[in-house]
Image (spheres, rainbow, N blue to C red):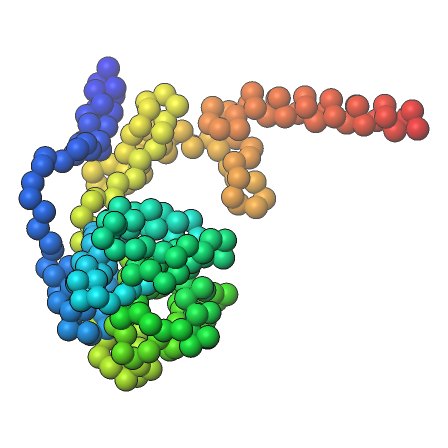
Length: 281
């Protein structure tokens, strides 16, 4: 009973704060305001902030200011699925006053729109053809520049984007922002400012779905592995690859004695079946 009470209390702490927040007036964070101010002044800006902190808000506000001046923008993503999602989102955000287009390897919809969403590869290909009419170029997930296979696409997009356009680059995981900003300044011969936010707006918690106790925190308050999780895996070993659960020591964890017996029976059955087939030949 005492153990169940302790687990219930730890679960309650683990799940606390989950739900719909109270309604409140939206106020842009300082990092959002700084980035929007940079872009309004035509300064290339690299925004590095955790997922969920509101990087897309910066892009939307910058695009709104440009559209009010009769200029155009392009928003690029590394994935067709993400481009399709942004296309639907921006249609609701900017339509019907402004047209929104989509350019991917599969779909081409109103490519001359005020706001165009595209995969980065498609934007790079447009630059190859000398097509650079946008006043604002947004490169989402710009950390792909470090990808061994696809990184060159982001490099070439930055290099080939006309210096008259303003670059907004968004990422949650760049660790060498100063190095990248310095290279951009040298490449484009114009200033590139870094705007960073390190604190996560939504706390990241790790949990474990236990077959007996349900959802429990993976670690205790001191940061040690939860005793229930440690006990659950105490009788388990990994296979030769080191990645899959294999032979158990205690027989209670995943891959326990019953699982092994079923596996052994299945193996004998299969061997016997194959043997009879071989004999019939």
